[in-house]
Each structure stands twice: as C-alpha cells, then as structure tokens.
Image 1 (tube, helix red, strand yellow):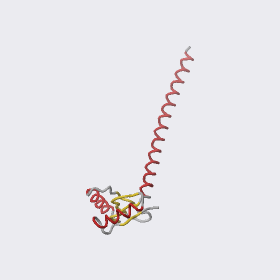
Image 2 (cartoon, rainbow, N blue to C red):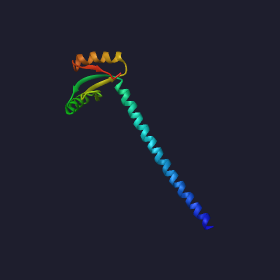
Image 3 (spheres, rainbow, N blue to C red):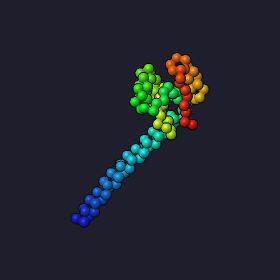
Image 4 (spheres, one colour):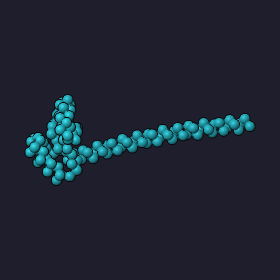
Length: 121
C-alpha cells in the first residue's frame, strides 16, 4: 500500500510540473504573438504614406516637434529613417496615396508649407 501511495504522490508531482510547464509555454507563446503583432503593426505603419513635418538628427528636437504637433491635435509619431541617424516627425499617416496627396496640399496651405510625404515601400 505504501508503494502505491508513493506512486500516486509521484504522479501528482509530475502532473503539477507538467501543468506549470504548459502554463509557461502558453505565456511564452502569448509573448511571441504580441511581439509579432507589434512588428506587423510597425511594418504596416512604415508602409503608409506619412506627412512629414520635421526631419532631425538630434532626438531632443524631434521630441519637441512631436509634442508640438500632438498638442495641436495630430496623431504625430517619430519614424526612424533607415540608413541614417535622422528621425522624421510624421503629423499624419494615410494608407492611400491619393488621400495623402490631398491632405498634404491642405497641410502645406494651412500648417506647414515645407511638409512632404515619406513612405518605406
């Protein structure tokens, strides 16, 4: 009987370890899924047409410009320029070129005459 109890105890311990391993595996898979989703969102954002209102080599200046446009109500963001140390400040992003060009014209007339469009396609 004592051998049977020891076996049962070992089985319970093994089941507990397996449950913890399954839980840790689920957490790791969720973390990897979250990283993948963030990476896909970043790539999607970069492939959009961005109305650029500033280009800076000094990060502090880029942050100041970002805050200025956010304070004006724009969904501003900073885009790292590939292959250089520049940071672009985007006031708006659009998925279609036609809409981006129309907004750029309005933007140049009313907000920032030197604004331009950037995309990483």
